[in-house]
Length: 87
Image 1: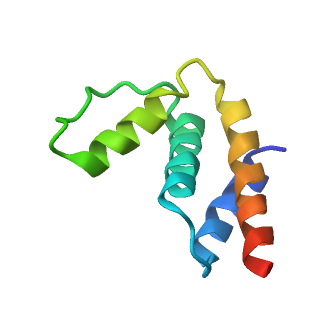
Image 2: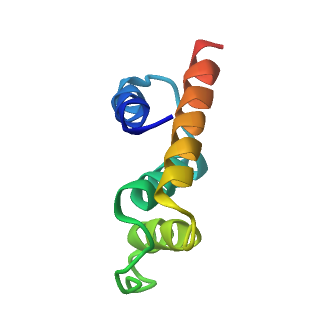
């Protein structure tokens, strides 16, 4: 698995029509950020910004994971969501 598969998964996630839970969205987001940016390097947003805080916390939990590992998990998660959508 590599960059091409990752880019295909990034395109595929945008095509999903079925409902994706907020938890799954945060998971996918966090693995995407870890795969593309590495460890979270931005300050935590204020607790009053609930959405931004949730995204920051999800990404920050991936600290220390390699970009390649994050890519692999991201691809697997997108495949899982695609299968779930097909029912």
